[in-house]
Length: 345
View 1 (tube, rainbow, N blue to C red):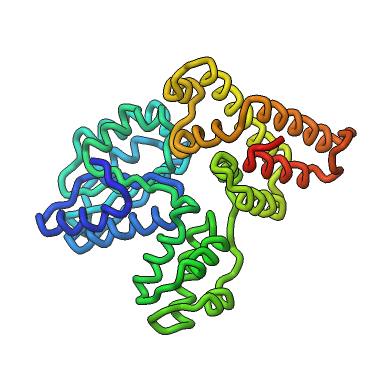
View 2 (cartoon, rainbow, N blue to C red):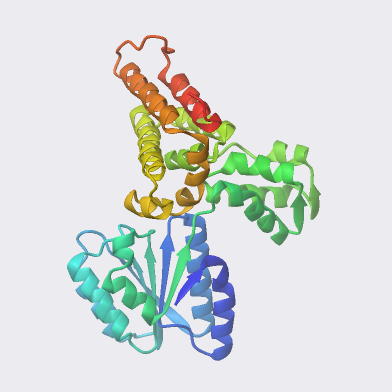
């Protein structure tokens, strides 16, 4: 059974009323706060139903997978119902681990609840036999990243838990300062609850309390460029520069997306359906939704010119001359981002 994180509370309540939780819960995703909260909710529901003992297994590269079998079949001296919690931070159990997980999922022991923590898996691993067996045996809680455009609504919902609310401008202000760092967002929302009583929060109150604790994801540049959001692209570039992100890596992300756009533009211009092109170029998720808009804005000639400018930035990074370009490659990359957003060269 596949669940989104926001559906977990309802599921647990229903299963508690029915008197039985699922034997296996998988919490998978790359949002630490949401993963922690989901795991905490599962543990709390299990404790309320008599699962009093907990055993923690950390499956690193040298993990002995027979320990999972031993934990599943071992007798408890103190409790009849037990939680076995397995953390697999790499998300790759290997052949032996995959077999152990599949065997466990196909025959989960009675009076035992398995809680398995995973990062977000790539498509191939997500389709593996062991992952399918775990989902079939119990509940797979999919922790989805909160994208920037959804962050103000998420913050507003969290404020509402404290009986506070804020205007859209204040929510956007908070979102800009905690982007990519939900743990910090959680802390700032908690701080606002301590500083101010329930009710409406003004922008001034929010600005005085909230710190700039954003963490910028280099790959967030891609949807900003595709959507034509120049100010956001510049803000991300500035944040990445301050955080010490290697410029060659940032340049590679930008230039690779421009190359993909150019290939897609040429293929669509040749009469091929965008859906087919998207599958061939491995364009999916938010990129697949934003790409058609970018293709309408950026003709092939513009994309080729922007790629030539990326080549000039690469020369600057290597200490070589690039005529008619600024000596600061970060400024040049910002100009390229703005040109991409505007649809100009």
